[in-house]
Image (cartoon, rainbow, N blue to C red; front, side, top):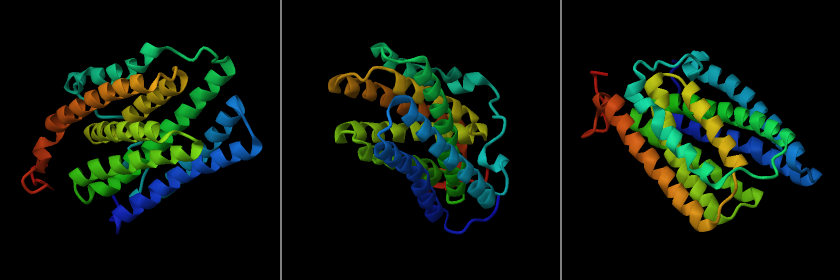
Length: 254
């Protein structure tokens, strides 16, 4: 990996960059008064451009696509990851409320494309590039700062008309999502599993019925709790030997 000066500054700038593309696409949608499928396609195009730009900057900063985590994951024994059952549980919760009744085939296909590019782009930026950049400053900083930057990026949803409470819930969930995703990235040396999870999560979130406020809080609390417990498990399983918790630094026995 190339030695990068000011990895924290680069991480902040990359966060601004990945947020900029969907914001601009939202402006285009509002100006052109686009709805449904057309709006989703505009957003898909914008995120695709963000992904391409991310590939360019990522390779320049880290030296290769493999350094970005774009390679086959090293899983070893699947049971060490608890067969990823916590991730399945998290995604089953919103299914309780059911899918949107007005989903057309065209809208479903456009949502599939959108969630695919979002999954690839956001994981490339936050776990692939930012996570790896911050690792040079220590594993603890990489895990928490990359997750924090990922979560605050969701405040951009306010520009799309989302309510403050709903946005805050999304930010909190995004932080716990980021913690687990970056742990999986470092544990498998790849962003492919986080990408797959991200795609599935976004599709379910976009296609299921928006429940009432109290239901959203309960569902969000359950999801958050599962992810936090899973993050602690992953940390103890894969990273405890790499960190001297008394000093907050990586050990030489890594």
